[in-house]
Length: 134
Image (cartoon, rainbow, N blue to C red; front, side, top):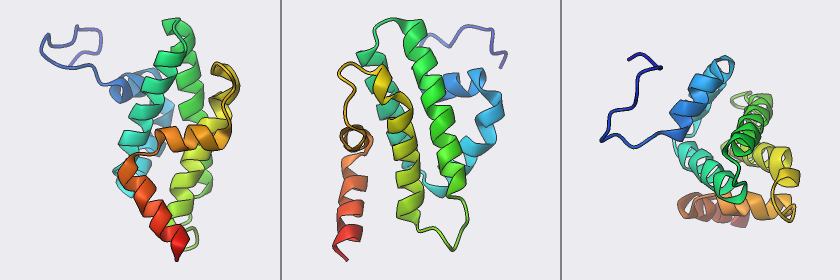
């Protein structure tokens, strides 16, 4: 499908697809993330929705989202040494990368840990709670 063509009228826009179109150089890292942690899509969607709601100017929100995801994927790649870095740490690297990259752009500059908790879906929060209890 030609990217310049309008979306199908019954299709819901996919913010991750839109980000991929704007940031083709980061495609490989995002594919690796999605293969490593399929639920990471929920984290990215929560992040995009949160930033879009907090920053009302669309162009500014898009710039913050683009920078945040690029930084987070860079942080995630730093943890990609299978067998030596636990799953939990790789995903936390992504979350921490998102939060540290954009916290100063969000109203009230929330704490990094608060942002990480907001973007982590409940099912993954339960996984991390169990992993920390061991």
